[in-house]
Length: 416
Image (cartoon, rainbow, N blue to C red; front, top):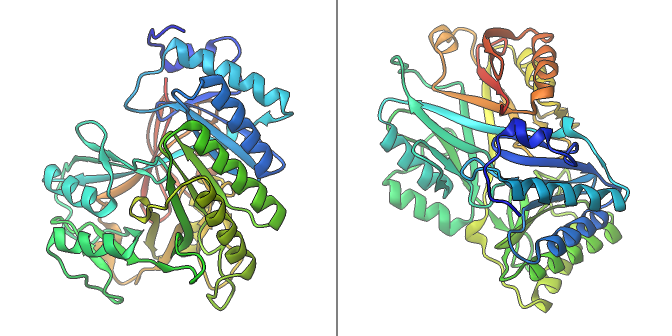
């Protein structure tokens, strides 16, 4: 296989990769699948194709599977083209159909006057790793990357966008100690960098006394480090079978160094915030299967990230983001959450902003989002968002900057 670099355009024009799109620097494909077990079968095929070396990221869902090759910090090569082609062939043999319209990657962008200080805060808060001069990324590549960019004008007021971060209790204590801060705010959970960008840091708890490997924090989740591709695929296959047999959909993210199993936000609990017996049974089964493979959980690698928007017109702002992202409304009427139906991208929620707070409402946020989508999906996404009352601020062939009805900004971008 050749290691010669290829551009996004060259990749997508290569033979045998019609299923794939380059999104945020990674070659990505989504395949609809009828069960987690079928997705796990594709993961096993991919492991066989790579010979245990260079396993791409594989995200198993009850409705399908996403495969990602490469990423922002690694150039795509001719070898990646060949791997994508054989993965497509394996998917076809399993009867799986690709849906490139499902692909998207969200990034949080923070404008800062003192970029090193702000970057240090968010690296500590999220336990992310550096990814280039101005960016941070989740080492497990599950939660949105963060980019820190220079501030072009003073914006002293509180943002209308903030971040919720869930970590294990020991990590929460370590973050507070490292930052030298005591949380503030209505729930005494809020920490802020030295420019006022805020995050609510929430400590998780145990799921049940029988499932000590699991952390319950917005979602119920566990992470098992693995020492080989075979071990990772074996665990993913066992989890998929247990989940399918129990009728409990979970998120199974397979990485070269471990496997994350996650309920998705609130999917592990009932309306009284108590663990669902079926989920606890599944969690216990997963814990047993991991133990039989000689694996031990590592809660320090776990996190949950969601984004909150303060808005004067909550329904209008919610409609904009639902249309742009292809999200769905949480069916619980007392919540404003919207979520990715494939649960590959973070939950967004909306809170009422006092209309009398005019200065804060009209100040441009220091936080905004970037949404990377396939080149052939850009116009569809932009049109959908503008139809809800959004505004186009600027555009180039691969970069459309939009604002929602309350002025919160997003850049819709595509790789060229």
